[in-house]
Image (cartoon, rainbow over all chains, first blue to last red):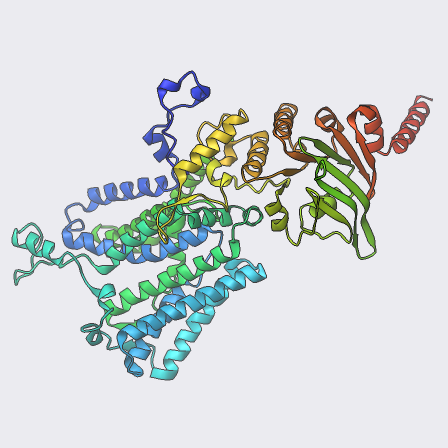
Length: 375
Length: 264
């Protein structure tokens, strides 16, 4: 899966490498799992460029809007993709988002914990939930689909019950005031590159409010996290030993075990990864909204899996990419926000999304066959 | 030092009341191909698993280069240099040749905590190793799924050798292959032995075993029918031993009888 086949040069044409063709960069690109999602993203942008190009969708404000939505989904989609490459599913991501939200809000609001401590607490709970999911799947050999489906209900139910028990309601507001002065909350709640937007505003290059400040004030934290996670996940998958183990664990569990890959440990760590990604998602949203909601994240697990699949991940494991999942999330985010800028009734949104997904999956399947099966 | 790389003396294995193996003795010299032949149900799989450390023998001893050894796990056997290539080959068809070759034993480079899988080095070694066997992998980053069955078999064997195998146990390496592919694999096995490895070739195909083997052990219903050097054994003799000659003779008589009846 690497691109380092360029060591073959034409000078050696009479050596044993004579039958080696030089593989062009284009051909390498055509063989990558993320090609479908990349192409899909371009198509989506062209589509909205044509039907909504003059509506403000692609203004600084509009762009940041759909990037924010894409980035939030992308954070969990990347973790879901890595787990899927490792051969497992996590259907409890959405419930974990709700659970993590109240793990942050209740200690901070009702028990008087400092916000940073609640955030650490939420991540600790995520590690526990992920570990529990993982160990259950690895030890029992049950399909992760079933194990995490159970966890979906357990976590959502527990979130609702605990919140109602402690607070008497299903929402916990009042977090916004705690963000200031907190030593770590800012890393989930700060817009960056504000100077750039102020400058662009002063140059009248982007839209301004009536008071003269730019409408778009900075890059939202979700986008920064999303980009960083995409890079990190890609580096892990393509460049590290652990990454090779992820592919091996998902590709052939028995074979990988036979050559010494610690398949169980790899899978458990990936479950911890999805739970932590859900918690990161919750941190960003809860701190942005200033409140936690027990229903937050509902159905997000399916969107994350859908984005990973659009991004070229194989449902049965062993194949896929983080960049693909990132583009998958971008398609979702762009379509879900873009449809408001068109004349299309938003009721059609899911039809459009489903159709996109089908096309992407059929295309991805074709690519994978071409690359991984003998002719 | 003995002349044998590995000796399995009077190995027995019982599963409850079932005697899976009884007093099986096999020895492999350096550079020798020892073929283990047996029909289905003869106890070949049990024997392989005992040799490779999956099962512990209930009786008998394993002697590696003169030292008595007990394998507690397949890893013990592997560490001592006894590598088994199973029929499923432990290859992931969706992954590249290089990633398969180094699966679980990836070379790394870089500073601690930021160590990376040294793909350039791995690609080079994998391409070199496959080139030595004369297998033209057009690109070490191509998926194993695109290779032929024989090429995959050679990849698995070559991987075992690269990671320090002294004795190779090959489980039916040619059973799923066509004539040409099988001959490629057999050629490679001979080459590996000529470089000083001991090879235990497990098969039920006499036509594949006879040309390459130096000695032959025939297994029948959990017992060894003995080990023979090639010069003491004709192909026909081996064939009839293998199939339980009498049974085939009987079959022949019966078929003739049927033939006669149908003609009447």
